[in-house]
Every structure is written in C-alpha cells, then in structure tokens.
Image 1 (tube, rainbow, N blue to C red):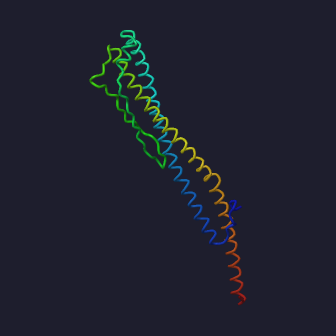
Image 2 (image 1 turned 180 degrees about the vertical axis):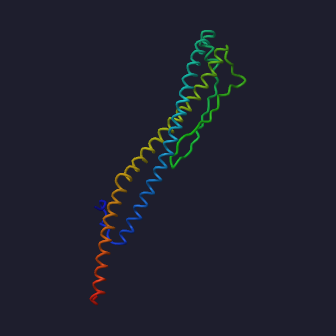
Image 3 (image 1 turned 45 degrees about the horizontal axis):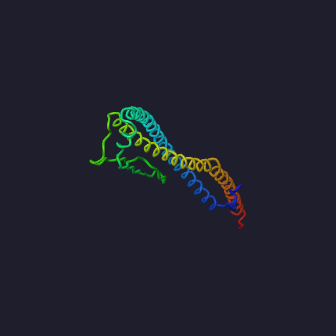
Length: 206
C-alpha cells in the first residue's frame, strides 16, 4: 500500500522513483544514527564533567563553611563583612555547536580583585574560607554549564532517535513493500509484453 497522501506508483518510472526514495531514506537514517552517536557521546562527556564539578563544589563548599565558622569565631561577624572585596567575580561561558546543537562547553572564571585600599581577611581561617568559596563558586558555574549542555544534547538526541525510529520502523519498510509490489507488477508486465512479441513474431501480426 502506498504511503498516505501519495498516489500509487507504477511502471518503470515509478520503480526508479521508489528506488531513489528508498536509497535517500536509508542514507538519511544512516546519517541520523551517526549524529545520534556523536550526540550521545558528547552528552556522556558533559554529564561526567558535571559529576566531577559537583564533587569539587560539594567538597570546597564544605571546606569553606568549616573555615568560615573558624574565622567568625576568631574575628567575629564584623571581620567577615570587612574582609569581603567590593569587586565581583566574572564568568564568561564558552559555547560550541555539535551537529547543529549549540551548547555551553566551558567557563572562563575571573576572581574578584581586592583593591589596595580594601582590607584583607583579618585571620588565616577567613583567608582559607575566601579561597575555598571562590573554588566552590567556580565549580558551581562549571556544574551549571555542563548540566545545561547535557540537557540540550539529550533533548536533541531524543528527537534524533525518534526520527531514526520513524525511518527504520515505518518509512523504509513501507517504501520497500511498495517497491517490491511495483517491481513485481513491472516484471509481470514485461513477461506479458514478451509473450505478445513472441506471438506476434510467430503469427506475423502486430
């Protein structure tokens, strides 16, 4: 049976069109499967990077909180407020594209810079806390970047997987069935034509 919305294809020209359509569909499925493998591979890499960043974030955050408590116990909350730099950290996200899917791949992190006029942490514990909090913030930015990339890649991989499934399970088999039916009809027509020619040659008629 012909695909819905298409006229039944017959004859040698129809057979040629079906062969071309089938070849195009198979080639398209092959290309989509290659795209799917690349997307899944990059997604796996992004998820692994996110897991690594998550471990760093949790570890450095715990360290920072421990040092913070010590620093506040030593210098009080006022010392904590006075030691904070006025500048802010800067995060620039780098993007890339894979098979048409734009996704973040890394971050460029710039620590806040304390001006010469600004006070430094009043004790070693607060200095350690500051360093650890900066590392935790950097890891959090990397974690968010890799998770976002994994989500974008996973969504495109699923869409690609559905397209491959539609081609492999429905469109290609349908084209093959239609082509087989047309080839059978063409072969039968050719046999009948050969019989008529032999009869005409034998009896001298048209």
